[in-house]
Image (tube, rainbow, N blue to C red; front, side):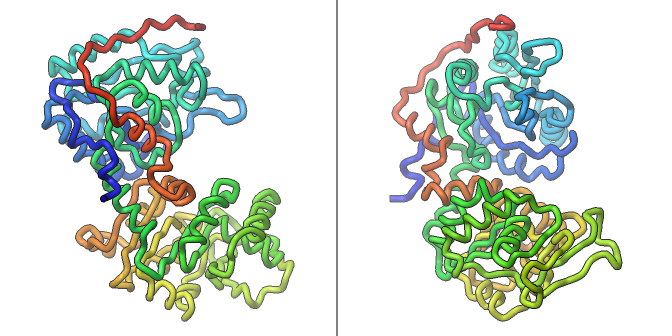
Amino acid sequence: MKLLDNLPRVQEADVYEKVVLMRVDHNVIKKGKIKDPARIEATIPTILRIIRDGGHIILMTHVGRPRDKKTGAITMSPETSVQPIVEYLEHKYGFRIGTPEMQITDPGGKNGILGIDTSINQMIRELRDNKWDMLYLPNTRWFHAEELEGDEADHLGEQMASLADVYVNDAFGSWQPHVSTVKPPEHIPSYAGLLMQLEIENLEDIFRPQRPFVGIVAGSKYDTKIGPLNALLDRADHVILGGVLYNAYLAAKYGFHIEGLAESEIESARQFIATADIERLLEPRFIVESDTMDGKIEGKWRVHDIRKLKKGAKLGYVLDAAPESFDEAEMREAIGNAGTIFTNAVMGFTPHFGDGSKALYECIGANDNARKLFGGGDTLQDFKSLLPGLFAKTRNDRSYYFFTGGGTILTAIEEGSAFGLAPVRAILRNRDRIDGTREPIVPEIVPGQ
C-alpha cells in the first residue's frame, strides 16, 4: 500500500459549486516585497484544479512573525500583509481577487484581528456568483487566536470553517499546529492539496533512502533542532553541520571562543554532543573567520584549518565553511558515493559569504546517481542565486526535489513520519466526514468579548 492511499486527497473532493477554504504557505514576503515566488507557484496546480472542478476558493496564509514573543502584541503592517501576494496572482494569472477587511480588537490593533466579521458573507455570496475568482484572507498570524490554544482557538477555528463547505491544506511547509492548519478539519470535509501530496511522497525517500544516506543541516538554534538532529543521525550514514549550529558545535567540542555565540547555544551544543552519535558527523575542516558581519571585506577575513587551531583559540565571527572543506577526500567520498542526500543548509552568512554553500551544492551536483533532496526556502534561494545554471538543469532532472519547507522535513524526521505532523493528522482524523452543502454564516463578533 502506498503512503498516500490513507490520505484524503483533493482529487477525491466534491467541490462543484462549493466554497473551498484553502490553506497555503505563501510566506514569501520580506520587508513588504516578494523575495521569491516559488512557494506561490507551487500551489497553482491545486488552485487551478479546484477552479476547473467548479469550486470557489478562499485562500489564507501566514506571513512572517508579526506577534511580539515577549508582549504578545501583534503588529499589522505592510511588511506582513498578503497584498503583494494578491497583486502577484492578479497580475500574473489575471485572477479577480477580493480581500475582505476584518474587525480588530482596539484602535491600535495590538491584539490583532479579533475574529471574522459577518461582512465577509456578502463577499462570499459574490464569490459564489463568480464576481470574484477567489478571496484572500488577511495574514492568519494577524488573527489574535491563530497561535493560541483553548476556547479562543476553537472559536476562531469554527469561524474559519463556517466560511466554506470544504477545507484543503496545501501548506506542507506550515507544520505548526496553529488554528488555520488544524482546526477547520474538525468541522468540514478536509483534503490534502496536490503540493502536500507531492511533498509527502518525496519525503518517503528520506524515510526509505537509497544507501548511503547523507544529511546536511544548518541553522541557528540547537534547542529546536536537537530532536530532529538525533533522529537524522539515527537514520543517516553521515551528517554534516553548518551555520551557527556548527559554530556552537565547534565551541563545545574544541573550546573555541567564537564571536557572537551565546553561552546558551554552546550549552545546547554540549548537550547534543553528549547525547548524539557524533561518530557519524563529518566536520567541514576549513572555516572562514571574519572581523565583521558587514561584508567580506579585504584584509578582514581569513580561512582556518580547525585541526591547526589550539584549544581555546579566540576567533572573530565564523561566517562560512570554506570551499576547501568539500575538496577533502573524506567529504567528497561521502557525498560522491551517497545514494540519497538531504540538504537543509545554507553554509554561510548570506549574501556575502556564499562560497561554502556553492562548493557544497557543486559537490552534491557531481553525484549523478544520488536522489538529491533540498529543504527550506533559504536553501532554494541560495542554490538559485549561487548556481543559476545548475539550478536551471535541475528543473528537468528527476533526481532533484526542492521541498517548500525545511523545518517541516526536520519535524517529520523527528516524528518518524509525515503523518506525525499535526496538520496531516488533522486531515486524517477528518477522513470519514460526510460532505454537505450550506450557506456560510459567521457569528457576529462584539469587540472586547
